[in-house]
Length: 369
Image (cartoon, rainbow, N blue to C red):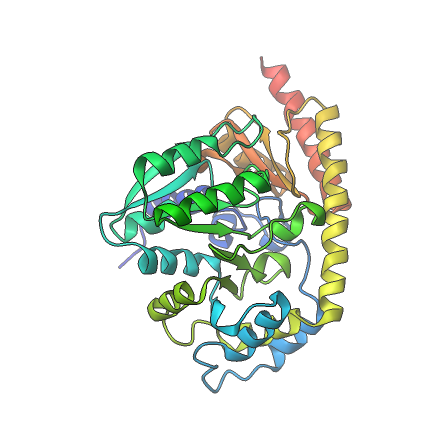
C-alpha cells in the first residue's frame, strides 16, 4: 500500500514535537542532511561515546543471547552505588522502567500523581496502563516548590508519584530537604515515590540528590555517556520493589552491545573522562545563557546544561531555525509551554552558531513588527 505523504508529514511533526533529538525522517522530508544538523533539543552528553565504550560495543557478540537479567552489569552497579545487587534492576532505557514501575506499583484505576510541566512519559505510561492521572501544575519561572505536590499527595492518596530531579524541561532542582519530606510522606501514606535522576550528573556535584532508600530511583546511562541509540538505564529500589519491577520486565531487556557498553562506561578511566566532559558542557552552558540574554532572550533559571527560553510561537521558531540554519531546538509545546523552547548546550563552537542564528531570528522578528 502506498504511503500517504500527508499522514507521514503529520506523523513526523507529532513525533518531533513529543520528544527531543534528531528525527531523521523529518530531516529527509525537509531536504536536510542529518549529519549536518546540530541538535540542541537533546539533553544527552554532546559528542561521541568514549572510545572504550565504542570498542566494547563493536566487540560485543550478537550471535548469542545476553544475560537474561544483565547480571554482570547489575553486579557492577551495586558496587558503584554501595547497594545490594537485589536492589538493582536494568532495562533498555529509563523509559522502559517508567512503564514497569507503573505496572508493578499500582493497579488499574488507581491514581498516579505527576508534576507539569515534566517528562511526558510518566503520564503516558499511567494512561496506557489504565491508571488515573492527577497532575499538579508548577510555575516554570518561580523557585521550585514541592508544597503543592505534598498537598496533592495528602488529598488524592495516589498509588504513585513521579518526580524528575532535576526537572525536565525546566532544569531546576527540587530542594533536597523538601524532597526528603515528600518521600517520608509517601512512605507514611503507602504511596510509591519514583525519582527520575536522568540528569543528576549534569548538576553541581554538591547539589546532587543521591538515591533514596525509600524510593524507586531511575537512572539513564544513555544521557551520561552519549548512548541514546543503545537504550540503557537502571533502577535502584528497596529489594521488595526491585523484585516487583523484575517480575514485569521481559527477559533480555539489555542487549549484548548495550551490556558491553554499560560495563565499559563504569570503568574508572571512562567515568573520569565523562565527568570532565560534563564539567565542560556545564561551563559552556553558562556562556551560552549569558550570550543569549545579552541579545535580549529571556532564559529561565536552570541548574543544568539545558534551559527553557521564552520564544513566542515556539513550534514555528523551531521549524525556521532548523530549515534556515540547520540547528534544532526543542519546542516546549508538548510540555504545555507553546511560547518556550528548550535548549541544551552542545559546546562552545556549536553554541556560537546558535547564538548567531538566534540573533538573526530575533532581529527578523523585530523588523516584522
